[in-house]
Image (tube, rainbow, N blue to C red; front, side):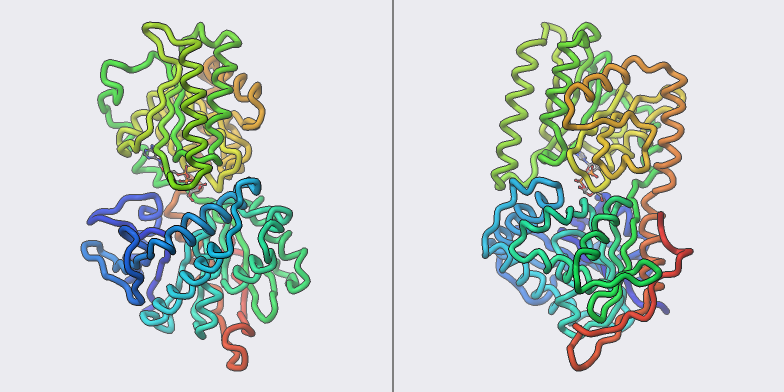
Length: 474
Ligand code: ADQ
């Protein structure tokens, strides 16, 4: 029997029936492969050097706890105040503190040692996201030669932005210890390869893989998607209006984690411009759902304040006794309700300044009635714009561009709405999340396991083959 699949992600799926996006994507694969999910859980506490096993899911869950200091320095610090802004083209928000990187490395080192204790020789590891960039390097140092894949959910940083790191060259070194690096889009792959092209330690092989020292790694794009059929099913149920009796006659929807990368202030300003330019006569409502995240990081406190100011000022300027232009809701919404909200909306606004993919865009498309679909307005800087080319693509920095797209969306004739929706729906289906995980794992399985050279304990090693071209995702 093939080896087990071990998945590592920042948070472990919690509760007896966890249902986040990544869980939907991976639960079948991990269950079939007798797999294990590893991630942090609970509130910060005592550091442990072995996992706690959580019961109640068909796959095994092994959880670890961060200390309060690690949570501050590794999670809020290096991961979310250095790597997150760096990857989202906000180097002005990068906060460099020596203890951030120190704890980032030490958490990865501790986790590697804990994984080593449960690892079997033919297990395959799939590591997720920017919290664990150096995890393969730490595992290789311990002599681990298993296949290790990595998927970055957020944009790959530009070569110029990487230079804000105190030692920019470590980034290329961290990734080089994976057998396969998966990125969201072709543009991300191009930026990653540009980094290796500029690095004298890297050499390109004829099949496009990168030889780095003695290591060979493949870099491919695997655009993530949603569980299309289940989303369509949720949206097609004839559920009562989530607004009750307060449903606006015509509304545009925005759904985001409250994050500066999502471009929500620009969206509010553009909606204001649209109202000023005569849109107020149509009395549409912008329904923005944005639960706060990472509230201890200053940049997140700033954006919360900024949005309240803009929404307050626009509502003050335009509201009437029976119409509130912006309804801004700071909470998480149930999945079923979200699907209904999408379906009843005339348009959706996704205005990310940078975004790995943006699943909200795909959920909105899947939720529409194909006979009378709403219009997706999508930032050209969201990864989803590489596939959803028939959305109304906008420059999120250009207020007038978004304002006129809102106008165009609300006026769009039915046949054009149907045509654009049908095109986008095909793209949403092509990137269904089950295909995403299957393709990634098929490519990773075809990578030869790494062979350690005893002299250098994992630093000098051969990876005998890159994945064959027929298995490469788009
Ligand atoms: P996120 O930055 O979280 O994900 P996104 O892809 O839009 O962004 O996914 C958000 C998910 O959370 C969606 O499924 C959405 O429905 C849900 N959600 C958001 N706000 C909600 C609310 N108020 N109530 C309920 N649900 C809400 C990161 C990257 C993205 C990448 C994903 C997946 O930043 O670029 O697409 O990972 O790889």
